Length: 270
Image (cartoon, rainbow, N blue to C red; front, side, top):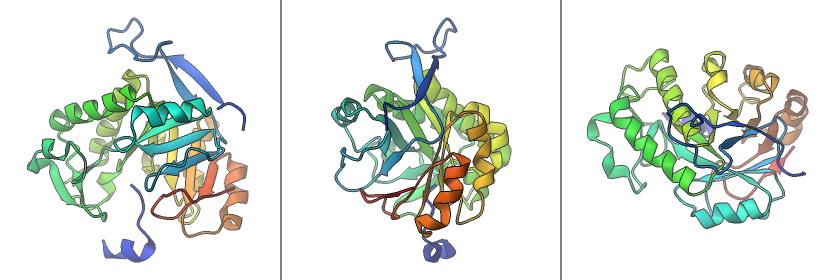
């Protein structure tokens, strides 16, 4: 989940370094991997990235990886970034409902919980995989069909928040693994967003991590299993200046930068 500013929270390179692995569709009876080579991208530690979820997309930032909204951008934008030598991550909210998405009406009212602190958003009852599984399948199909290399599923730590549902850690693990499996079946690499406490259980299910503010909250050590496993950690801070976190996160092998909360074009890389 994109963390709120502290005031609001109180109220609620070269070519991209990568490794490929066979997709799960090969000889397994699973859904065939849509990528021509039957392989998916696995980002390595230390990659520079751009995370832009608002404003007009600026494709000219000289980084290896872009993370952009899956709904807001057409296949042509993904193809343009590929031509520029970038890998592209598809941002989706998989743990919260957003009233501004084109498929918002497909979510029955009984799976909508309390607000998550962002306008127009409500937590989802992740126990209802019978309902959410098909809906997330369609969203991940969209990412794959647009040519994205990976997916960043957001709001994947509802069990630690006031959602309006009695969610447990086991519920969260089950749902996160469902989303991960659906992504991988489509040839997409998949990142674990925040959910730091479940990293030991989920490390094998996710190909990289996306984190907000681990330096501010003194949590960055919890992400080191990803780097030790050869997996990227894409990290941002909002409140801290770069001199306060970059030396440490560089040492840890993270791809770090400072952003503004609206996640527009502006960035200060380490």
